Length: 247
Image (cartoon, rainbow, N blue to C red; front, side):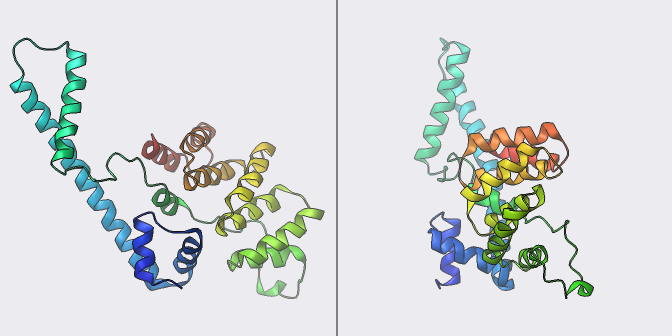
């Protein structure tokens, strides 16, 4: 396995390979110290980014005022002048090294996904000690889900789907695929649940939005989040915040 510090470095510099991403996800779930270090560095990065954004806005305003005060009496039309002033300000900031590569490169999709994804709890099948003698396929599938044995959960839910193709099975099979980083398979099932418009439809919209974000499909994520906000039954506030990050 790759060195943990190097994994963190590659994550925050968006250089993880598919294999490294799998290692990274496993460590987040199983290594408490790694998770603490990740959370610390993620929060530190957010603080720095917010500080840089504040500095950037202040510098833009400062340069625009300087340009305006130095402009001759015969000015450009106001709309064209403002565009010219802002463009000149940005050019100056680039020349002075004020703009990091993240400032205008758009959202960090992986960060947004990690900050918002949390697997949905099992609300369908109660697993209790008194039911330990129950060896049904359904129970085994939900036990695998709750213990994050994602490969086994996918296998069992897939078998269950062949004889019991319900919204619940499709939703938790999709969840298992998401946790196993198999987004294409998850998306197909989530769309099926959304189409059935049952109890798990709004939750599926949320997770489909997150999957689109992880895949960097910004337009699809925005469209899905807007549907979720209009629906209003699940994570409306979180969706509004996430939408602001994307737009």
